[in-house]
Image (spheres, rainbow, N blue to C red):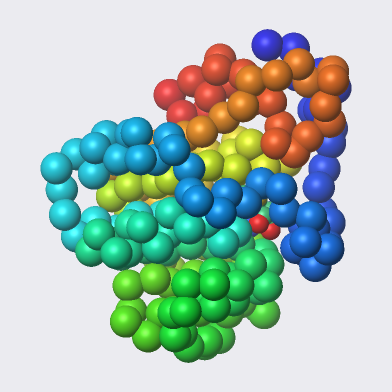
Length: 196
Ligand code: SAH
């Protein structure tokens, strides 16, 4: 659980935007994540018509999966390109509107209304703006957050959750001396202390 070498590491918003611009998006899974398929029942727990949140969503195809199952999906990413690519790659018509509460914030919504993607920093969101969620798919999100921001991120996520919500979290385990991240190494003990 020695995370020493990554503790001070910071990825700026600009660096993330550059990754998208350069097509340097090895994290994107074109065919979706097998772990969501595997643990879908845990996320849904027999419930239908849920509100599902995708923090740091990129253009995750799992958003389309869940919307097609009848759930309502909300995502957030700093990259406008990622969000626009999501809609165009799935041939989904959408509209764009400003979010007055967030300076420079925009929201892209599928015409059918069941997918709303916010273009802003996740730290700009609050439950008064986006409501609370019944489920969270956190893949490439906690592990992409700068190590110094983890506490803030976790508190926000807890605040965005309904009482009986399910939170699926994917992390990666590796020697943090051999790779600088992201994805960052988040030890299990830290996950426990962040989320309880
Ligand atoms: N969850 C997605 C993307 C993972 S990569 C997937 O599974 O494919 C991390 C994403 O977080 C990038 O798309 C990056 O643009 C976005 N990002 C980084 N910092 C952010 C922040 N503070 N607020 C919102 N999005 C952020």
